[in-house]
Image 1 (cartoon, helix red, strand yellow):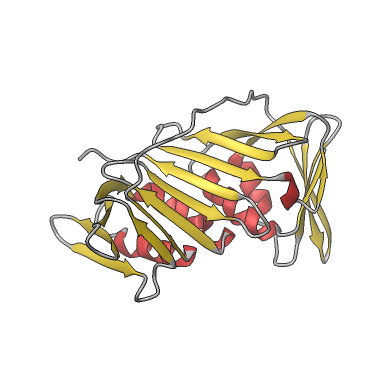
Image 2 (cartoon, one colour):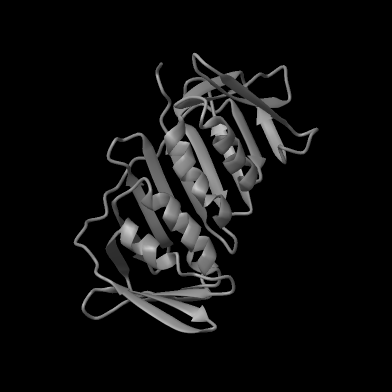
Amino acid sequence: MRLKFRDAVAWRYAITSISKIIDEASFRISGEDGLLLKAMDPSTVVLVEFAIPKEAFSEYSVEGELVVGVRMDELAKVLKRARRGDELVLEVLEDGRLSVVFEGRGIRRFTLPSIEMTYEEIPEVSFEVGFKGKLLPKLFRDIVREVEPISDSIEFSASKDSDKLTVSSRSEIAEAEIELSASDGALIEYQVLSDARAKYTIDYLVDISVASQAAELMEIEFGNGTPLKLTYEIPGGGRLVFYVAPRED
């Protein structure tokens, strides 16, 4: 197996974000369907889906289907060495180890042990969407960081009678509220299908926001007391999706 992706830095931030939530995961690599990682965090609060279609790779050599298990923190440590302009090459060696190569100014090769894992089929997450909108990933990261000191939870709300997405956080001592709209340029596009309000644990969103540097655009979807779906659109093709379960308090 040999895969080549033009933007190694996009993988760097995507995998770093995933590694903060998932300890071990397996990549399913198919000659027809591309690369897919789908895993649930140990607390079953966050579901991660990282999918890159075969067309997004500049080189894609796969026979049949492979499952490659890795420790995500080890893979993230290697990918942190990616530099702007590097291409990423992934190869499975004859002894089963994973070779990670950066091709840019010179060729830098790292080898990781693979771990025995089966690819577990995880059901699709479905819920009634009340709000969906697109914004710049860096804006999302900044918002999460601004409200993080206030409380351990963050609330998203939208009203069908308004063109705004409201992000808020409250504690006994302080509170914060941020309004985003298309008119002020914060929302690139949006759709309010019904009134929506849901609360989530802030720590997970802090970890997820690390992926902001892996994408040029992201989409937010949620409903009334539903999971939060965050989709990062990877340059060159592919997506990184996080489903975050709502808090009940």
